[in-house]
Image (cartoon, rainbow, N blue to C red; front, side, top):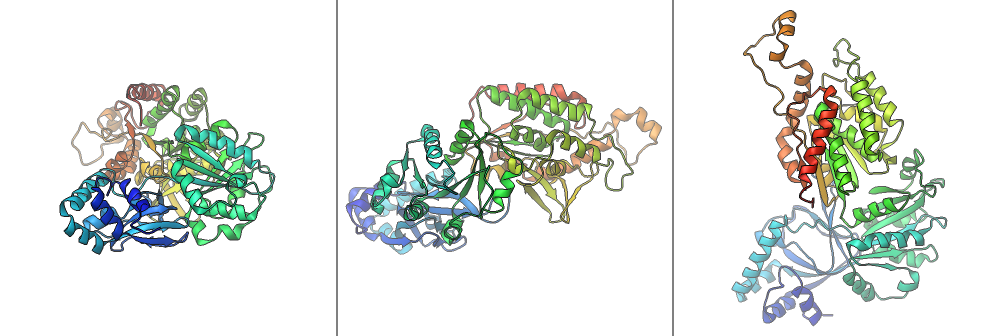
Amino acid sequence: MSPGSLDTVTLLRNTLVFGELADDVLASVAEHMEPLTLSGGNLLYAVGEPSDALYVLRSGSIGVFRPPRAGGTPHLAGVVGSGETLGTVGLLLDQPSAVTARALRDTELLRLSRASFEALSERYPQAILGAAQSALRDLLKRGGDEPRILPRTFALLPHDASVPVRAMAERLRHALLPFGNCLLIDEALGAERSPAWFAEREREMRFVLYVDEGRDEHWRDLCRRQADALLLAVRSDRAPAPWPDRAELLRHADLERPRHLLLMHPDERIEPGCARRWLAVVDNVSQHHHLRGAADIERLARLLARRSLGLVLSGGGARGFAAIGMVRALREHGYDVDRVGGTSIGAIVAAGVAMQWDDATMHANYRRAFVDGKPLRDWTLPLMALSRGERTSRLLQRFFGDADIEDLPVPFFCVSSDLTDGVAAVHREGKLWRWLRASSAVPGLLPPVLHDGHVHVDGAVINNLPTDVMYDRGMATIVACDIRADDVLTSAVDRDWQPGIWRQWMQRDLYPCMGSILLRSGMVNAEVSANQRRALATRVMRPHVENIGLLDFKAFDRVVEAGYRATLQALSEPIG
């Protein structure tokens, strides 16, 4: 079909950039469009390249890649589908490309070069420039033309014949329906269909689920080629083995697409270590999910549909227990947490959410650990820190056991500060207790965690509110508990030297204590970028705990209640 055909005009009519143009102008734009075909995995343009064209997708999908806000290698930030545009902002503002764009699968596009755009602007100055300016304003309001849309077409591929893939597909389709229509295409429906038929189904549907039941290799290959993301299903009770068609998955195009490892648990129980063992033999997994029953499949659907809620909990010493009350209030209002993470004490509370402790268990466990357990009471000669840290480590092991982060039913991360590399380290794997200990290792108060040649201390030193880490996972809604500590260190005297022990003890209310100085010192650096991280959250909760000391663990019940009351008040207006 030629670029100037009715099909092209209709396609352009539905775009943000050209939708308001008169018919004659739109027809002229269509005549200037050049067809372009990309095979899956091929590059459209790279970050930093000159923006020399605007693109409209006719079929297929383009992945947009950018470095994570939390740092690291470029990752998939969004997917551009049929009828959407790319490169608009760069072309109109004459800026280099801010992202890398690559075909996730075989893709057909229409290309409007800069020369053609300028020629059209000279011929129809008011129409073209007016439409461009209007589109530019709308795009900039949305944050540019970098999409936050997640994949819409999925290939559900079983590892072997023991995986009940058909039943899984039906349950997932049902879970996706609240977010838009969803078509399940199996071999019986899709075999021998033309590419145009698949393109039409994908335009009609919000989601398309391609299902391979392991009977035909040709159909399995077609499922892989049609999908924006791959859902790799395994039975967790089977011995882990490499993916049967591993060579096909290692093709360049597949490496660019998200791969979700679905760990199906027939007995509805997560066997310790199963995720780590499967992740060791299945290559390049983007995320993994534990599926025990309906609730887990519903969480998977929310994550795939970008209707998920991520909870981020900041550090803040004893004040951080306000997050326990916050979680209770969210649950009472029917909010399901689909991913959780945090820093320092926030990471420790987040771990309880990830383990799916109920409200009573969370309250009891944290009270026993931090009020009754007195984690900082193993004082020592301060060569590395004031305490030995052994008491804290034992308490964390007592309550969290030997669990791997990978085995938590709710996806979890925590942040420590890697002093060796000078970066915020994000922990999504390994022993849960160890990385909770690292995330809460306040410099000078607790000794650092030394692991694989690296020195890890409290994550609050670099990133006390890791909403950027959550944002990079594509969460639609981010709720953050932000414990401010900028009111903590005050002094009632002017002095540049320390008085004698007896006088300081008698006048201790006039001086900040060493623990508060160390804890606040560990948090103050992260305040530099805190406002940017707060802006990434859909809702930021700030419990009123200013009258609570950072190490006042005896105020546990008051802090929890303050977090609960503040969240109830904030939820008078729905989130999202």
